[in-house]
Length: 265
Image 1 (cartoon, rainbow, N blue to C red):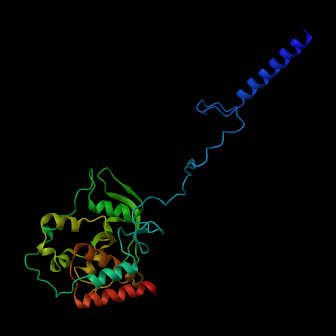
Image 2 (cartoon, rainbow, N blue to C red):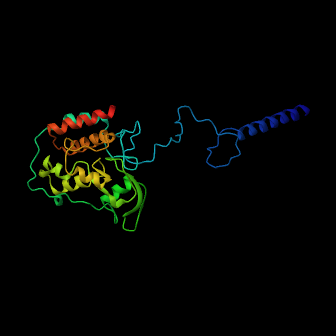
């Protein structure tokens, strides 16, 4: 009798121990959100590592030129923003080498009206206002999207401007220059795109004086007074002509080469 009691007691004790072990095993799926556990169960071998937060990749602005993002680098304009889509130095050299060389074309049939601008860019904004916003610092607009205050630095002459009315939006490759180097054969839609291109380095806020001094001249006939801007100007001009398949003259190509050479100076 005493032996049976001792055996049953041992069996009962063993059962209690097994039950306690089952309660502490890692069988929970962790979906209950209770934070009483000391730690989560280890991940099974081969399970993917949870993604980590990535460092900031910049402010998200187009053409920020940071290494590794595949975008063109260098060269600042206006309020410090990079011109959109501008080619790097070596890419610009390759583009320049690939441009067709041809004599200056005719101006027959040319009119600025054949290059529709400024195009609407949403709401009451147009291309001019979009460039002023992009190239300026602390730009404030009114209800009609007009820039009423801000600061701009004109790439061509280095002048700092705080009155938007004293700024022109320059077509880096002038409309007339585009006409005589291939745009005469385009349709209206392509000419409009060329005149309002916000994705390439075709538009730039500069002082009215610098813009009007330039007129419709190519780089062999006019260069920005601020020599420090030649590198970016040469790259921008070459990028646009390459993108639109426009031709260059021998003299123009020679001067663009000189401008690109200043990039390494």
